[in-house]
Image (tube, rainbow, N blue to C red; front, side, top):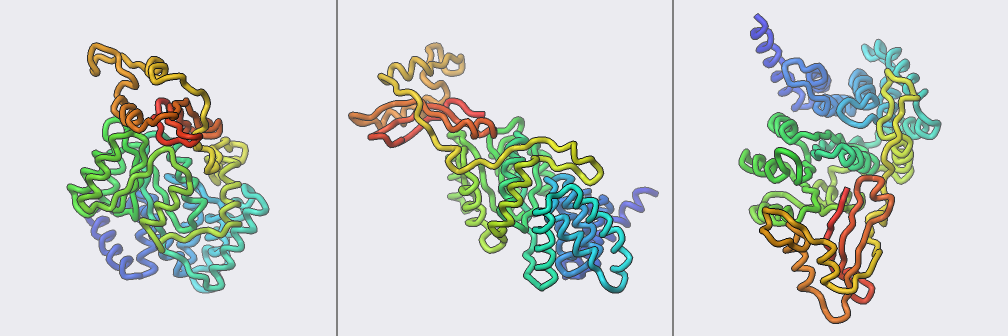
Length: 396
């Protein structure tokens, strides 16, 4: 009997999807509800937000209520109090028809959320809701999937993207198999993936996507030397893929996202962006509506662009001194120790660039970068005070 009901739910969801894709507001809201509850479709908060957003942007007050609560709670994404308040405020201003029945709940949720916000955050949220009422254009949501086995990088990158762009939905994954299953069900606007991860790598994920046909645009983030080669090979096969070499700045990330997505992205105003950043600096994981404000956890501050600058520390007297300090013994490399171990080829390429008068120095990025789990250290080739090339020997 349960299988019969399950099939009926799937059929209803599919019929609803057809109408939703044709622009039916009620169907869009219902499909969002299906995804939020897992009715007839796998539970997927990202898809729920997408369909609520489409209906809310057309003025559906019930969707505005559901979207506001979903965005403020966060679930599989970082809570966004300003955006959540905006939609709850719009739902609370419903003036006619069946929308009036949800006004008390919208007002109650908005007021509860306001207790967790600063005065400036509330003012910004009310400005955004006012713009919506005046008929300011609402951009379609941009769905971004980000996969990285380090949760600190997921959080930092997600914060940077949400601070810069107002219409993004960033869904974060630490498990490649999990994101693969999600990619089989839904098509994001872009995929951001690390390469060097346990079990399956970014290369494994890209290979699966290409074999499956029509992969989304892909940004690979990695400081691992072999990554560049396989990314280039896929790019030569006309796959829409690009490498963002780690460590990278938020500005480099924004530039690549804009290059790939163009006019789909809607940038926040400078004032709104700064408010979002202030919120992020206060806390990396804001308390949910069901929690008390004192449960806030101190989070990662967004780094300044110069935080990843290579700062020269110590000058070496000779190549031999460098190699002695970075000698690696590993049975996989043979019996004899090897300078820089598995990065020996990279070291040789650096040495091949040396000219008379060049110097070798140790380098390290700033304390801020190490505090934010993006530190890098190693050896640089320096010519007349300028870094020509570097080899990374340590990162966090």
